[in-house]
Length: 102
Length: 235
Image (cartoon, rainbow over all chains, first blue to last red; front, side):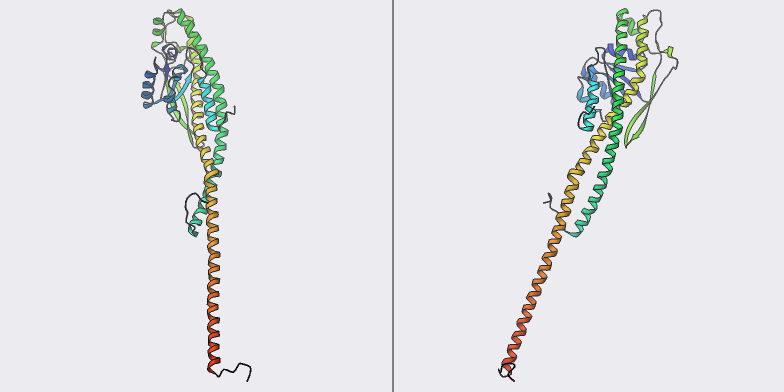
């Protein structure tokens, strides 16, 4: 049985709690890093992370990009979308094709 | 010239020819794999973009509703209402093989099936906006799960395509030309040896013939001397 977690600042993740997801409120990137590594070791399959937090944790996220679990999915936080999620799709295309063709 | 020193022997030639054949076959297969992966990847990426746009919109709406709810309620109240969720989500993960890439497929089920059961609080002390917010969240969650699946798939496929592309290029532009060059080098070298051998044999034959002629001439001369010195044909 796999678990789903949501990571981000308190206000952004509170709503997910109502859905029955596991939330992990973090306020600093250091806390986020620690939680991320801990979750990667346990069987978390999906990890939703606010873009605001992800923006400060680039290398850690890149580390799990090619791993099967956890799938780190960026979602907009309370402050709105930073466009990182969309940019990531673009990066994936560039990586695969060698140029942005979309 | 070949980059590394190779033995210009017939055995090496046979070995290289075998390797070249394998490499060409591998190259063709990898190229097919790359093309098919690319096709799949494009579909996945298109879906990914559409889903992401939808999820981001849905989440913004949910966050907006939450902000309104938070403004109407005290933070303690809000936290208290949401702290103990009524339903829990269970996730099953299976794998699907897309062109030898394992991609995850998620199946999730909630502990309660009734749609009205998602509110983990009593309605008396909470504002209606919170209901809207939780509702919006619940709606967008299906898409979020799909997004996780699609996005991870696209990441894994991108990695695999990158690897395959590198392999195809390495074979096409480095390995196969190098082997062809080596084969050419060995063939030329062997031909050259063959010619050198022929020439040597011809030279040796010449030498032997020359020696034989000389011997014959000497023998003739001796015979003439022994039998009286009259020139032949004078008898």
